Structures are given as C-alpha cells and as structure tokens.
Image 1: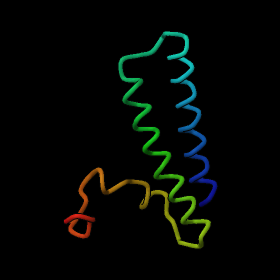
Image 2 (image 1 turned 90 degrees about the vertical axis):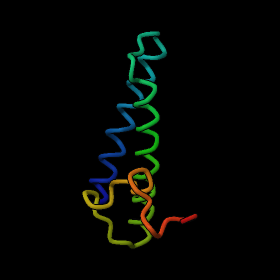
Image 3 (image 1 turned 180 degrees about the vertical axis):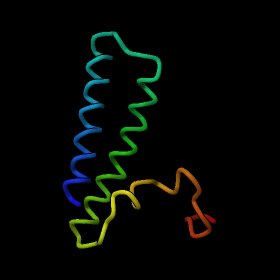
Image 4 (image 1 turned 90 degrees about the horizontal axis):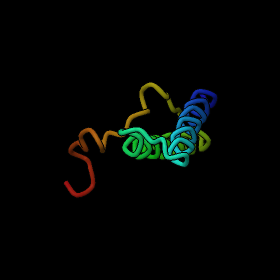
Length: 80
C-alpha cells in the first residue's frame, strides 16, 4: 500500500508544480488558487496516512483517504 500512498502524493505534487509554473508565467486559470488549497490539504492528509503506515498501522488508501473533519466532524470531534 505504500506505493499507492506515495503514488498519490507524487501525482498531486506534480499537479501542484504544474499549476504553480502556470501562475509563474502569468497564465493562471480561474480555479487554480482554490485547487492549490485543495491539493495542499490532500497532501497533508496523505502524508499523515504515510506516517501512520510507517508506524505500523494498517492503512487503506481507499477507505482512509478522506478527511472527515471537512465533511462532518462526527460526535467524537474535539469541541463537540
């Protein structure tokens, strides 16, 4: 599964670099800034999954690759 997580990290990192290169040449598109924000968030989630995996936790990319705190924090969320 490490290859799956690292593959997704690589894919998003490359997309991020393409968008930043486009912005650097003043050819940014309308949704580029919001996409960068989403990619940065996704990369944080993926790196957390990778750290958990390296610590010995069983991580499933398809099941664990979402951040429930942006969807619905649930009843066990801090501050509830």
